[in-house]
Image (cartoon, rainbow, N blue to C red; front, side, top):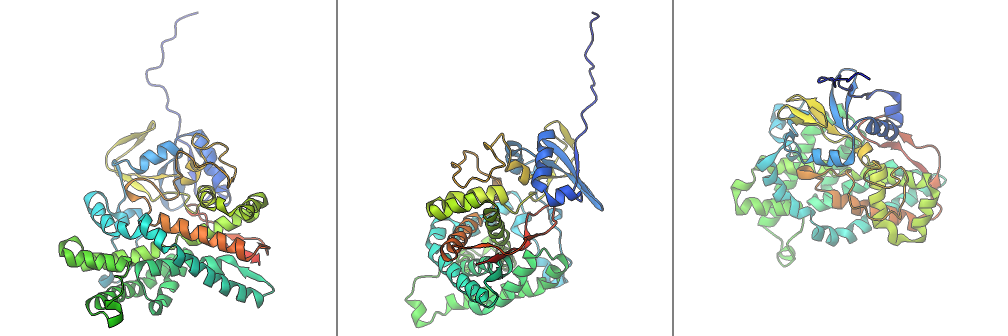
Length: 419
C-alpha cells in the first residue's frame, strides 16, 4: 500500500450556524442550543438585520470565556435607548465598564449585597411575599380562584424588595413599578420613553436620603443607621468625594433598581417548571428543607438567561479552533452550558434533590461581572415558592402559560393558575 502524506492544510470543519429567528430556537431553545453544543464548542448566531456573533456552547469553556480578559463588555454590548441630551450623563452603567473602573464602582455597591445583609433582610422579604400573597388570594376570590401568577404576583415582588434594599420610600415606588413592568415586558421603545422619569426618580431618591441623613428627626437620631444602598453610597461619597460622583450615584441607583427585576421571570419560570413536573412539586411539598437547593436547580434548569451579554474580542483570538477577529462579538450560550452533560449528570432532568454540583450554573454569570444581586434573587425565589406552597396546597394550572418568543431570554408573558 503506497505511503500517504498527510495534508498539511486540511480543510477546516465549518462552524455550525444558528438562526435566532428559527422557530425551533424560539420555541425550544434548550433543545436547539443543546444540539449546537454537541456539534461544536463554538457556533455562530445570526438573525435577519443582525450582524451576528459567536457563541461558546459548553460549560467549562463558557465559564472560562466569562472571565477571559481578551473579551470585554462594551457600550455596544447593550441596545442603548435614544434619550434626551440631559439624560446622557446617566446612561453609562457599571455593567458596561471593565477593569479598574468597573472594580471601583463594584466595591462601593458590593457590601449592600453581601451575605450578611441578605440574611438580615430575609424576614422583610418573607413579609413582603406574605402581603403580596394576601393580595393574590383576595384577587382570586373575585375571579373564581383564578389569577395570572406572573402579572398578579411575580411582577410585583422584585420591585418591592429591591426598592426596600436600595432605600426607595413607599411613596416614590409607583413610578418605579411602572418602569419595572416595562422592563419585564421587554418593551424597548416604552423603556426609552420612561428613561427621563426613571432618572428623575433616582435623583429624588438621592436628595431625599441625603436630607434625612443630614437632618434626622429626634426619633431617627436615636435609631440605628439605615442599612440600604443609598445610605452606603452617600456615606462613601461624604468620606471621599473622589470615590463617587453625583452622576455615578444616580446611575448606580436607577441601574440597580431596574436590574433587580430579574427575579420576575425566574419566579414565574420556576413555578411553571414545578407545575409541569408534579413529582418535583410533591417532593418540595413533602420536604420544604429541599427549597434552597431546589431554587439553585430551578435556576439552572429554567433560568431566564439564555445568552450572556456579548463581549468583544480585544485582539485576534483563537477560540477552541475558531478564529475570532478583533472587535467581533462573542456570547456564552448559558442555556446549553447549564445543561452540559460534561458538567452535570442527567442535565436534562429537573431534580430538586440534586446534590450540590461541584461546578455552579452560569445563570448569574461568572467572573468580574457576576450578578451582584444573585443572593437577593435566590432569597426572593425561595420565599416566593415557600409562600405559594404553604398558602395554596391546591395550586394548579388554569390554562396554558404563554411564553415570549425571545431567543435571548426564557420568559413567560402569562401564567394562569387556580389557587
